[in-house]
Length: 414
Image 1 (cartoon, rainbow, N blue to C red):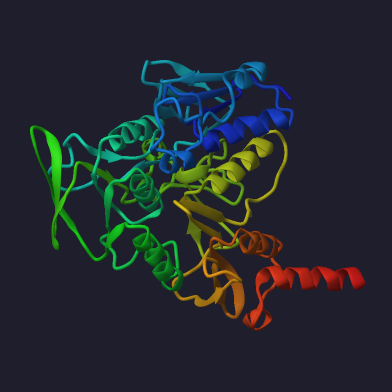
Image 2 (cartoon, rainbow, N blue to C red; image 1 turned 90 degrees about the horizontal axis):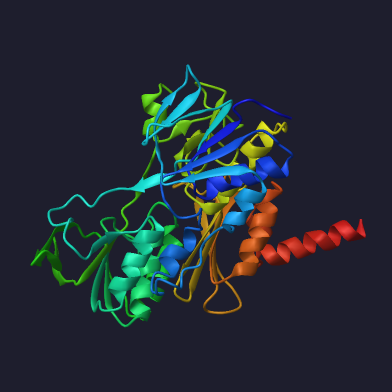
């Protein structure tokens, strides 16, 4: 298979890497170009919030060495971000003025952190975490920080809170919502998660608004909330992310909190353009309506699907969503997509540290959240991934792992 202009991928993250890796793996031999705004080789993002306490030489996060791209004839261009799309001419324009033609364009632009909208957010010692450079800066700050305020009780905030606590800092998490991980985790499991963080020494303030960040000599000294003032020599915030979909919007593509794509991840406005990862809003059999998912699994699986599709395959995107978060010695894992109205049953495992929350919709299992129970998470992924019906009665006095073993034994006998 050959083409004149080939495939251009905008974005050098996990999704973009998965596209080009799958393209070459599927035998595509046309030109492949990756345009990335960072100067680092494409790297893994999950370790950034879990290992930000390591020194500058301790973060080894490259997805593959530079030779991977060279050996596969992938034109990797670092530090030259795309500023415009010309759909008529089928070219992208970079900040340096370079025009790169494409036969097929893949937007893997990811998401950007939502800014901290309070006075003082620009002070030294106030950090967001999105990039490798951010993680290294936070790691350096943690070497001297003694009072750390984490604004936002989401995955990244809680992971960083444990990193800071492990370095001996006094850590306070400030969350505007009335509970941690309010959109991602059921209230039943969240309470146990909170208790484990508090037992480790992390102070948690929910239902609390940050009003300002104050400092002296240009550096943060305290965080003012509606419940009092917190001393701080380091502030890290993670209050959500917004898709980087402005290129698509400016080019006239359909956008609504992400680039709107069909079940094969093609733009509904232009079939020569695809979107993958955090910037894509797509239909999914496990969701009602369109959904935008921020996870490594989603970025990887979508990238692989688009790479294979451009190389000649044709299949809809239907990978089971799953997520994980390592928060100190707390391992939170989620399989499936839970809706607020779903019924949740909380079950303890064979150890006090193991918990599972089973979410049912119309008496059918749709999602499973686990704390420190990897085997149950894997069983959930197997059953939900196969679309195997599981009713609440099936789990009465049992677990998914036991249910899966029993069903396999029945299949063997029959």
